[in-house]
Length: 625
Image (cartoon, rainbow, N blue to C red; front, side):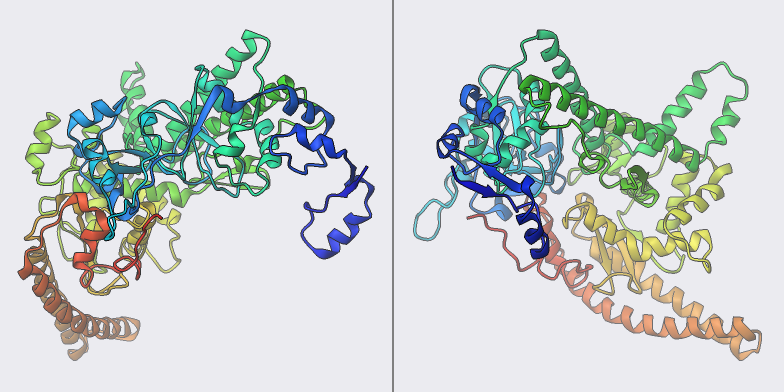
C-alpha cells in the first residue's frame, strides 16, 4: 500500500523538512478507500470512521438543494446598498415573485455573500427586480447578447440558508427569508423542513471537517456542499435541543446586526436604548428621588452597562456554539477526532466593537462612542428621531413637517436642522455648528447636569491630546475624522456628504448635508448662507487679532498664538475664495439627483466640491461577468 506524508500544516521549508521525518505525518492508505468519498479526493489522512460516514450516510443534497442565484451582468447598475435608495421603494417581506411584481416596487433584498458571519446578517444590498426583473432579463450588450443570467428564479424569496461561496475562514451560513440571491451568495433550500437543524449542522465543526476534505481550497460552491454527509439524531429531544440553541444563536446574531445603523431593522443606538431602558426602570420604580437618579446617569455608566449586556450575549453565543459542536460530534461519533472548542475570534458578533486580547473580550470604547456620535448626527439631519425608533426621513422630497406628521410628532424632542446644512468648522461661528448641536443632543439624551462629565468621557474615548480641552478634542474629531469614519461605516457609499474647500477633507470650509434631503438650491444656499458669512467672520477675526498686535495688547505666547492664527486665516482666505468660484459654478447648474441612481452616480455630479474619498469612485466599473 502507498505511504503518504502530510506536510500541508507547515509553512516554512525548515518546518516541512522536520515534519517529513516525523512519524505522525505518515499515512498508509488503500487506493480503493478514496472512492468512498464523493469525488474520490486523495484524502489519505481520513480515518476509518469518516470513510464510513461518507460511505453510508445520505448526502446533504438529497434532502436540501444548494442553488446559485442571479448574475446581473452589471452590479453598479442593478445593485445598491439599501441605504442609498428611497426606503419606501424597497420591497421588504414579499414571499414570492408574484407578490413582488404586483407591488410595483423597484428594489428588493439581495444576498451577496459578504464577510465571515454565522447565523444572521450581511444583509446590505437591494437589487432592481421591478416588474419581475424585466430590466435585468432584457439587459443585452451591443451585439444583442444577454449580459445577465437570472438563475433559479423559482427559488427567489423562499426561506433558506445563505453563505459566502469563497472565503478564507470556516464555512458559515446565515438564515435568510424573502430575499433574492446572488451567484456569490448562494442558498440552500430544505426539501424536508428542519431549516434550523440544517443551519446548526452546516455551521458546526463536523461540517467544516468534512469540507476540508471536499473543498480543500475553501471554494464552497454548490458541488462540495451537496456532498456533505448528513445524519439526524436518533432522539427527538436532541433534535429539539439543537433547534432551540440554533434559534438563540439566530436571535443574538440578529440583535447584534440590527444594533448598527447600517441594518434596515436598526431601531436606535445601543447607548440610547440602554439609557431609555434605565429611565423607564427608574420611572416605574417606587424609589424616592428617581428623577435625580435619572439626571445622575452618565454616559460612562451607560457604556459600562452596554459592556455588561453584550459580554453576556457574546459568551452565551460562544457557549451555544460549543454545545452544538458537542451534540454533532456525538451524533457522528467523532469524539476521538474532534473537540467542540470554538476560538473566541470565530464568534461573529461585536466584530467592530470588541477585540480578543489574551483570551478575553475587550471592548473598543472609541468604536462604541463613534456609533453614538453617528446616531446623533443622524438625528440632527432627521434620518432618525428621538421621538420614535427606526428611520424618520429616508426618502426624498419630504419636509420635516410631513415626516413629523406621519409619526404623530407635534413637538420634537430634538430639533432637526431646517436647511439640511450643518457646518463642520475649526472655528465656532454658527448657531447650528455641529459641536454645538452635539452638545445639545447630549443634554437631551442624558442631562444638562452631566454634560461636562459626558464630554470628558467622549473626548477621552476619541483620543484627547494633553494640549486639548474636551470640546477641542471633539471638534477635532468632527473636523478631521468623522467623515472618514462615515465613509467607512457606509462602505464608501456615504449618505452624508461633506462639501469642502479641500478635496482631501478638513479644509478651511466644511459643511455636511444629508443626501435624502437634497434639493437643487442647496449648493447656492451653502455659498450664500455659510461660505460668504464665514469669509466675513474669519476676516473680522483676522482684523481683530491684527489690531490687538498693532496696539501692543498681546505679548509672549498669546502674541505668538495670535500671529499663527492670522497666518492660518490668510491661507484659509485664499482657499475659500477659490472654492467660492467652484461653488458658484455648481450652484448655477441647479443639479437634480435621483436616489435610484445610488450614491456613486449622484456624488460624482459634485466631485469638484465634495471630499474625494476614493480617486477611482467616479471612474471605476464594477461589472460582473
